[in-house]
Every structure is written in structure tokens, then in C-alpha cells.
Image (spheres, rainbow, N blue to C red):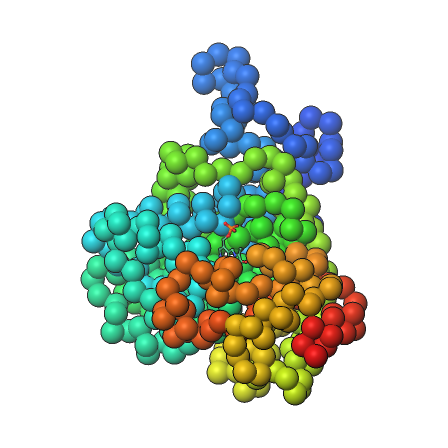
Length: 383
Ligand code: P1T
């Protein structure tokens, strides 16, 4: 389809066409490792499924369409996608990253890539001025997560990509928390968009999968070479599930955002809650940036109960009946997490506490249930 589609239509049709064999409307799950050749090299575009697979191609075209990118790439997980991006660089190269980010990304950067000679700086990017002094002639990448996991800081993507361009530094955005429904970083000047599609894109907590979207042909070739060499590829079933999820992304995101706002406002007014982190509040430090770059404020929020201690947080988490205490986010069902001991346990306590991840912090992924049921569940757990 050549016509430029609006977002909701692109989520369903972007880059898709009926399958060539029998006209199947959804791409078949091409569960094959290899492809017959009529003569050596005589294949129909597919040789071996580490390199390409038709179900994966359908998903890659879909993410390219909804991120307004030239190229999409699918990976075995969000971490496999990040791992591939970081392998673009050489020992001695420097990376500047947000200081508040998914614990697994922090672990990969510090425990693996620092060992291979990459130097990684972590800064609060809530204010662009913070990291200007770190830019030097060895800086190769700025890694942004926005909204950040789990403190919900919002980073001004356009301000940072402008800076990246003047210093000839790549800018990559982990768009997992927002999804392309809320923001499209390539349109704001980013070079690479990354997703843990395990979350909002697949949307049903039933697969682990990662995605990248880029415009530049050379960058795409380099990433594809690294991926094919290392092999962090998803299976066709996972690609199918992610593609199916994307077709309802816009509908789900609307409800995630509505429910997220209602829960955030309710918690903010609750007498037993100390602090709620959600970019939709006018007094959130990055509210103006969030308003400018996001369509709405998302379905993620974090809060600290009064007292802010571990025991109170644990008690609340154990009392939930509708919220499930579990890692991950972005599925149709509401999840609650304890970043200090779960998703961010790999970050040393003194470092995570500097960015606000205290032992009393609870993170919520607001699902698409009836919001009154969610509010009642929160009230009984906090009481
Ligand atoms: O789990 P995986 O698909 O490998 O994605 C890693 C990842 C990358 N970026 C962000 C912002 C993430 O939140 C994640 C995974 N996060 C969780 C599992 C979590 O509960 O926060």
C-alpha cells in the first residue's frame, strides 16, 4: 500500500499485504529454519531464518510503518535489541545515558559493555544542561529512555537530538513506556528507536520480543550485520503475536492513558500516599515537555506510600487482588512491581536511591480493566 496512512490505520495495515501463497490476511507463522533453493543462490529472498523470516518481515514492516521509519528490525528481546545497538561501538567510545532507566539496560551497559571498553556516563536528562559538559570527541551515542523506568521523568527528545546533530553523535530512544502511539522519536530527530515490544506493542504479556526502527541505510546495514552475526532473533510465533498486538495498540493505549490518569489523580488525593510520579500532573517537573512531545501521559505511574518504608510497600503489594505483583508492564492486565527488589535490583542501592528508587517505591502498569475496580483494589490494599 503506497498511501500514507494515519496512525490507527497504520497500526492495522502499515507495511502489510495478504500472504502471497494463499491470500491469508494475517501472515502465516513460517515455522521454518531454512528455504529451498532451485540452484545455489536461487532463492526467493529468504535463505536462513537467523537472517530473515517472512513472519518477522511482516512485523518489521509494521514497526517501520508506525514509527515512521524506513527500516524495522525484530529481536529475541528488548535486551537483544539494545545489545545490538551497543555493539556498534569500539573500545574507548563514550555513551551518555539517562540515569533513571530499566535495570536490565543499566546492567548490560555497566556489567558487560564497560568490560569491553565502552565508557558510559549516566546523567539526569530532565535538564539538557546537565549533560552538555560530558559531550566530547569520543561521544558516540546518547541513550534516552522517556518516560523513564520507573521514575517517570520525561526527556526532551527534540532538544537532545538537536544537540546530538551538532556534535555528530547518534541518539537512540527507548520508546517502550510511551509506544509509538504517544510519541514517534524519529520524527523528533532521533536516529534509532528501540522497543521492548514485550510490553505495550505485543500488549498481552505473552511473549518476549524487541524491535528497532531506523531511517539511515548504513546504520540499518550495520545493525543487521551485528544481529545476523550474533543471532539474537525472535521466532516466528513471537513475531506473529507482536504483530497481532500492534493491530489494537491505539485502542489499548487510549484506555491505558484514561485509566492511568484516573488512578494517578485518585492516588494523589489519597491521604496515605506521600508522592505520585506521573507526567500528567501540572507540577511534574517535565510536564510541559510531556505535553509537547506525547499525545497523552501513558499508563505507567509510580508512588510512595506515607512513611516510604519497605514494610508498608510490601504490605500493599501483598494485598492486591486485581493488580498482579509481577515484573513487566504494558499488558492488558494491571501489574504492580517493587523496583528496588525486582526490575531495578541490579542497580546498586545508593545509585538507584539517587534517582528516587527508594525501598518504598511501588510501580503500577495500569491495564484496561474497569478503572473503578482498579481504584477499589488500590484503596483496599492501601487502607
Ligand atoms: O524484557 P525485554 O523485552 O528484554 O526488554 C527490556 C527492557 C528495555 N527497556 C525498557 C524500558 C524496559 O522496561 C525493559 C524491560 N522491563 C521490564 C521487564 C520491567 O518490568 O520494567
